[in-house]
Length: 249
Image 1 (cartoon, rainbow, N blue to C red):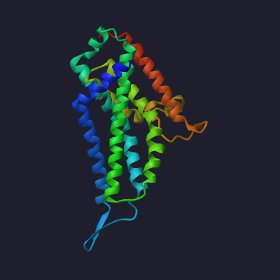
Image 2 (image 1 turned 120 degrees about the vertical axis):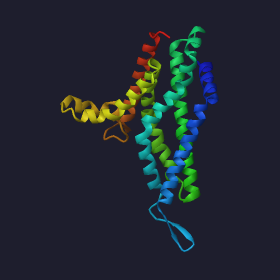
Image 3 (image 1 turned 45 degrees about the vertical axis):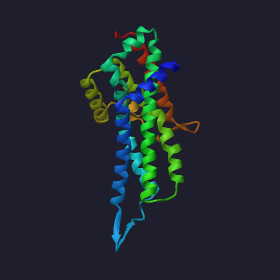
Image 4 (image 1 turned 90 degrees about the horizontal axis):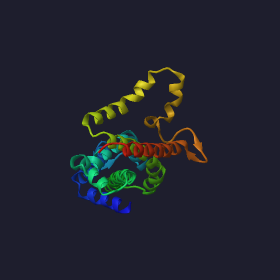
């Protein structure tokens, strides 16, 4: 299992998609900070002054809102990147022919994808912190708190998204299926909101595309969304392994 994971990481580092993804995470974050900075500065004589409300809390609130919205789509992109070479080179056949159990192949691909996502988020956040301190400057404690209060807390939710998209990528390799998944993900909340059945509305808060942090309920001091996210990860990984074991490669 360790050799398989190491092989996945080695292939990831050789992939052009990995560096494109990392560069995109850095550039998009930098553009966001620059947009906030230049949108909230004004000239007074020869000095460029920053409006007082451009605080770390404002920057982090905007950044957190963006991550909340694009998080599922980032996970989907990560899943596509993770499988790009597999689909093109069909290396699944080689791995299976060497006698590697399919569940190990599945889990190693999931772990590598999760690692790729964490790298992207880390590079993005590091860019945010450095660019803010260079352009504006301010206390660093809010940025440290954000790591624990937002990023770490969202990892189980992002892992749940990723486990769902990994399942689809293992079972399908069609661009049409990819577009269908994105369309369903985007429009499913709107579709569900038009269904006035009580049972539909009662289960909506527990559907994977409706999960959000923070929720209004906690168990033993931990937000219920984290428990539900872990449950989704376990169920979706088990389902994915079950289906992959029965798929003809």
